[in-house]
Amino acid sequence: MKIIVAAHKPYQMPEDSIYQPVYVGSALKGECPAGYIGDDTGKNMSEMNPYYNELTAMYWAKYNLQNEDIVGLAHYRRYLGSKSSHSLQDVLTEAEIRKGLEGADVLLPKVRNYYIENQKDHYLNAHLNEPYFVLEQVIHDDYPDFEPAFLALEKSTKIHLYNMSIMPQALFQDYTDFVFGVLAKVQEKIPYDTYQGQDARVFGFLSERLMDIWVETRRHKYREYPLVTTEKTNWLDKGSQFLKRKFLNSDQTRTHF
Picture 1 (cartoon, one colour):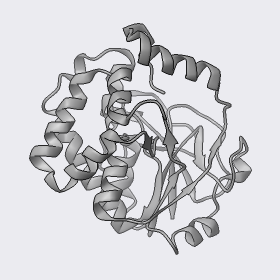
Picture 2 (cartoon, rainbow, N blue to C red; picture 1 turned 90 degrees about the vertical axis):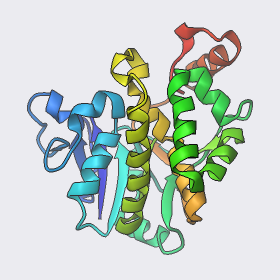
Picture 3 (tube, rainbow, N blue to C red; picture 1 turned 45 degrees about the horizontal axis):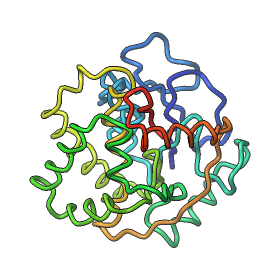
Picture 4 (tube, rainbow, N blue to C red; picture 1 turned 180 degrees about the horizontal axis):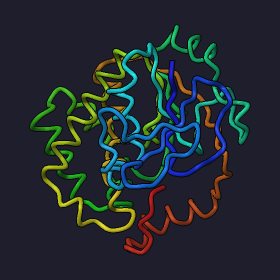
């Protein structure tokens, strides 16, 4: 079992050996921090990190952790935990993960509910619109089996975020085949390398829409867990930015929420 922890800088990490820090974007940086593995080793897409975010760690795991029975992805600031907290002592243990997978196919973070807008509107209010419409077309043209779940997600206010999950190896391979297959087709159709600032992180944002689509289409059972976040969230600031995006429609307020 390995839960890779995507990180772009040295940071406190869980002491449990199942958690493996992966230094994302290593191909574009200097020396890898001690105890980390660079995502530029083995088969990789490290140089695409500015556009794919933590997905370059996921891609690395897909091809370089194939001997593990269970694979997961966490962030250096976010983990699945036994309870909601800010302490790394509460991240899931190997025993808790194995127990969770006894009754579920996939372990996911607790669902986010935006209440006042559906997922399609939320994305279009927060990000460049062109990539989303291209994603819609790619699903329609090349992944028609997934389209019903995609259309249902568009209308839902709920979503599992962060590209975080834990699952058996076989499911991980199927999931990542889907994610990277879809994103590769989107990549061919958009000028992603001209995007600036946060908009450049386009594939990381689009991929958050793919987890629930895959889970629902494959009819996998999932179990949700609270987040352990090593940094406290300013919900007042996030809430105000959310409302500005929705009601002011200002480019200056477009930030990921």
